[in-house]
Amino acid sequence: MPDALYERLAIIGAGLIGSSVARAAGKAGVAGHIVLADADASILADAERLGLADSYHSDPAAAADKADLVILAVPVGAMASVAGDIAGALKPGVTVSDVGSVKESVLDSLTQTLPPHVHILPGHPVAGTEQSGPAAGFASLFEDRWCILTPPPQSDTQALDRLTRFWRALGSRVEIMDARHHDLVLAITSHVPHLIAYNIVGTASDLEAVTRSEVIKYSAGGFRDFTRIAASDPTMWRDVFLNNRDAVLEMLGRFSEDLTALQRAIRWGDGDALFTLFNRTRDIRRGIVDAGQDAAVADFGRPHKD
Ligand SMILES: NC(=O)C1=CN([C@@H]2O[C@H](COP(=O)(O)OP(=O)(O)OC[C@H]3O[C@@H](n4cnc5c(N)ncnc54)[C@H](O)[C@@H]3O)[C@@H](O)[C@H]2O)C=CC1
Ligand SMILES: O=C(O)C(=O)Cc1ccc(O)cc1
Image (tube, rainbow, N blue to C red; front, side, top):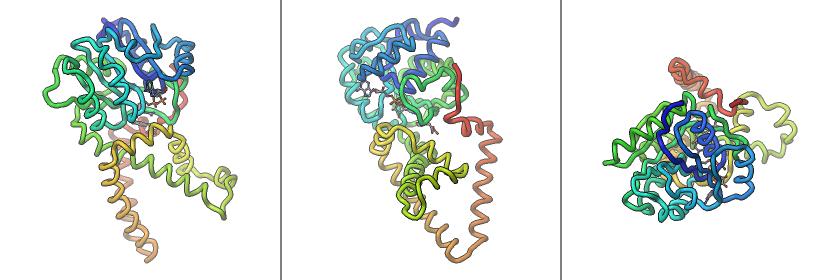
C-alpha cells in the first residue's frame, strides 16, 4: 500500500463521481481517512450502506474540517454555495479541488469565496456515464482517462504536484490546461454533443407520424447511443449549459452553419460535398483509434465491476 498523499480527504457530493473518487482513492491507498458529505440524507445513507468512506456528514463544513484535500463533486451550479459552506472550516494549506465539467466559472467562484490560505486547484476527470448516484460509481472509472487540472496562474507547484500524483494513483492521465481553454475544448467534444443528443431524442419523441414504440423498436445503433446520452442527469447538464454559455454558443453557431451547408448539399443533390465531408470525419475516428482512445470513446456507460 503506497503512503497516503493526503492524511484526510473530504469529498462533498456522494454521487456518481464523488463515490467513484472515494472508491478509487480507498483502493489506491492515497488517503489516510476519507470523509463523504452529501446534502441529500438518502444519498448519504446509500453511500454509508455501500461502505464507501471512513466517515459521513450531512454538513459540508464538518466534512471539510481538518481536511488536507477537499474535492467538490456537486453539480457546477452548486459549487459556489458549497464553497461558501466550507470556507470558514478550511485549515491553512488545504487543497480545494473539484470535478466539475465546466472550469472557468468554478475557478471564479472558488477564488471569490475561499480564503487566501487555500490552494485552489480545479479539476475535471473526463470520465463518466449517464448514471447518477453512489450506487452507479465504480473504482476503475478514471483508469486510462484524462483528468484535466486548471490551476490559476502562480499556483503552488508542490500542491499541484501532489494533486497530479493523486489523480495518477487513481489511474488517470493528467493534463494541465487554462480554464477558459478547457471550456472551449469541452464545449465541442462533450457539451454540444450532449445538447445534440437531448435535441434529437426530443425531436423523435415529438413526432406525430412516427409512434414512440416505433422509435424504440427500430432505433438503430446511432440513435440508441443518443438515447443513452440523453438520459444523462438533467440538473448536472442544465448547470453545464448555464455555466459554459459563451463557448457553447460559439460552437453551436459554427455547428448550425455547417448543418445549413449539409442541408443545401442534400437539397441540391451535391453528392461530392457529402462524400468529401464523410471522408474527412472518418479520418478523425481513425485518429482516435490510432491514439488508443477508441475504448475510452466506446466504453462510456459500459457495465463494470470494481
Ligand atoms: N456524470 C458524469 O459523467 C460526470 C460528471 N462530472 C461532474 O461531476 C460533478 C458531479 O456529477 P455526478 O457525480 O455525475 O452527479 P450526481 O448527481 O451523481 O451527484 C451529485 C451529488 O451532489 C449532491 N449535492 C448537490 N448539491 C449539494 C450541496 N449543496 N451540498 C452537498 N451535496 C450536494 C447531490 O445530492 C448528489 O448526490 C458535476 O459537477 C459534473 O459536472 C464530471 C465528469 C463526468
Ligand atoms: O457518458 C458519456 O458519454 C460522457 O460523456 C460522460 C461524461 C460526462 C460529463 C463529463 O464532464 C465527462 C464525461
